[in-house]
Length: 263
Image (cartoon, rainbow, N blue to C red; front, side, top):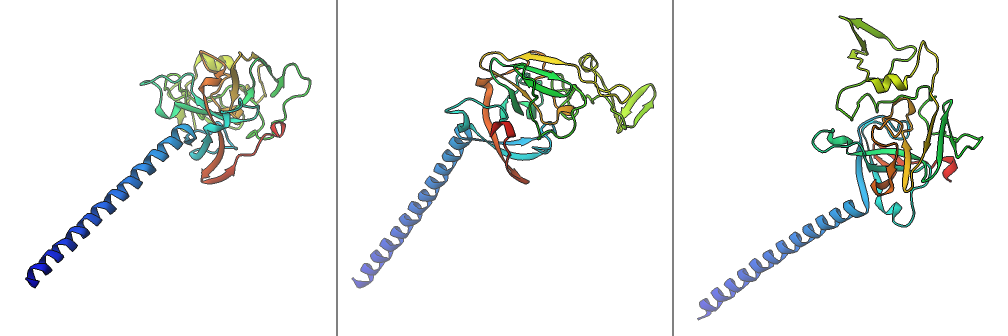
């Protein structure tokens, strides 16, 4: 009798241990599922975790930097001048464009309804006599033709900017090469023309920003495919602006500095 009671007690203990393991397993599964749901919600509605494959925003954002953009930045107010914005590329075409060109990162310069004048490598807002102070630019702005670090996302063809003074160009079999890469120039680049015989040449440009839209360009003005050159529009709709880029985390860059005029 005592032996039978011991066996029953042993089976009861094993059963409880088994039930305890199952409960603990389900508890971990529940935590794992909740964590995934929270991560998805945060990524879809709160932040954007993005990689920057080009040098169009140098020196603010370097090539292949990983950064975080806040979607919540524009829940209660519209983008401000000087904000670095993440937006849907207005020229992106599903199945044709490069996947990493789906989202663009540029600086908002022109606000809805404003007149933006580019003259002598300076930007003037609404006919102001004082140009915008832009201490974040990578280098002296010497050419009004950029290709977003060499790639024309309109047609996927590799395209290099007009050679500037000091570049070494090799001519071989009737073709010109810059740094070992063939120079392919589209008519649009020739029309926007860059540097001739080492002289600085920047054609004037005037843009009247549409309502609910923004004029956005890269900090690397000499090498950025941006609103100045898009084929179907020169502006980004506010509805297509997804987030404000605020932090570079790999490699660590910290919080992006605000433009002086935006403080």
